[in-house]
Image (cartoon, rainbow, N blue to C red; front, side, top):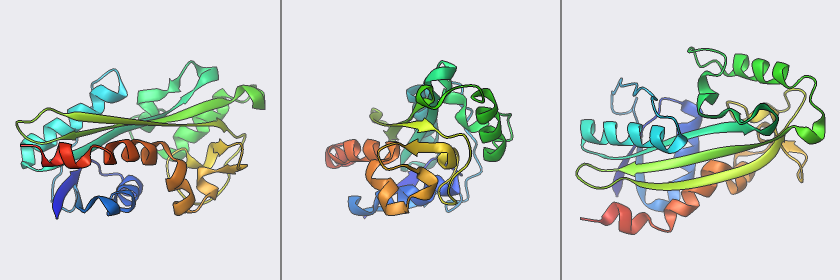
Length: 200
């Protein structure tokens, strides 16, 4: 079984990856599982650059195949904010509740049909002395006026899928994993998994 390190300390994200990677024949490890306390600075200007920074840094450090993602919420009425700053939108402490509060306050006067948004996920998979590979997924939706639902993490309580009339936080894990940006990126990755992970 292939051992894969997920370059994240986000427990919600790790849980999603373990579920989504179950069919890959991969044994998934988090940074915590490996006793790694590295926080790779996200100094890139794009999701792709930040994903690559995390994957390549930790692959070199550990010698393991490393999967990193950089994902975020892009709101059209805010010119793409919070974008690559999604996790730290309200400050460096990466507090999801504060991030949502700031987002809703900025959209307070924006009408429902203008609250369009999308989640983006860029995955980077790296192994020492090999080129880094990428996969990308996107999920379109709208921002609600208030939080709805108790599941998920991050901006999930305010990200609505209009044709289901449910936020990500109102969906069960199984339903969310059929349509989420991360799931779509992983499906793209799955098509190339054997050649990428098995190369060399």
